[in-house]
Length: 258
Image (cartoon, rainbow, N blue to C red; front, side):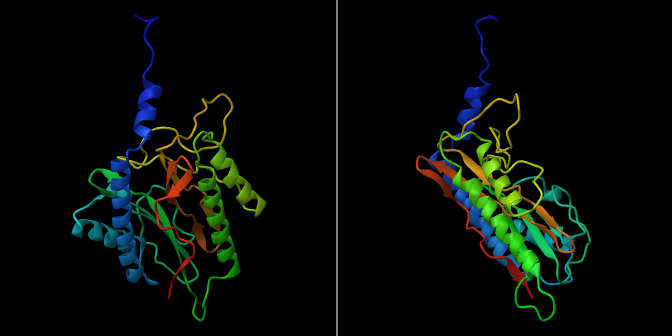
């Protein structure tokens, strides 16, 4: 049968990537519960907390709600404290949050088998400061603009490399270095739910196209600011016939820690 059989990979991949209305409703429910936990975190944060303190606090909030973490608990949440801690899928450390630093948290709850996974940002005010300094605010605004550029490209029929190219143009035009990784992945029963991700175009790689019913993250623009830390954001987007519908409550201002 070798000459008569063909791989089902393309069919299965596209089937899993197209979320039904019921699946989208469960993703929304996971997002809402993640938002609730982030609201608790806002009240907990202050200078002197360590990455481990914040991590433990979030896991306790997950436990109290009878939820699961969206990925492995040893690094969910990811807590990136200032310019010391590495960013990425690593366990939190004992670095103490200090004034003048940024704080990035990448976290998602799992509800009834479906996941959320988004990133939020804080800045710790220096004594006497009322707002972030210009370098921090400018980078946050640029990252926000870059994520918005990704979202604008999430339309049916668009190649999966186009969102990355749009985001790259935003960063480079603002004189920041290019990002190293992809700018989104599909979301569902897993945080990385299979199917085509949103990455830069590669010669010889198969071309995939965005389809109605896909749910993508829009992210991956993490940029380091010397002496301050990392800044990045992440949202979730449902692809509809008319374009991307944002499922998360977008962070459009840098949250401040007094």
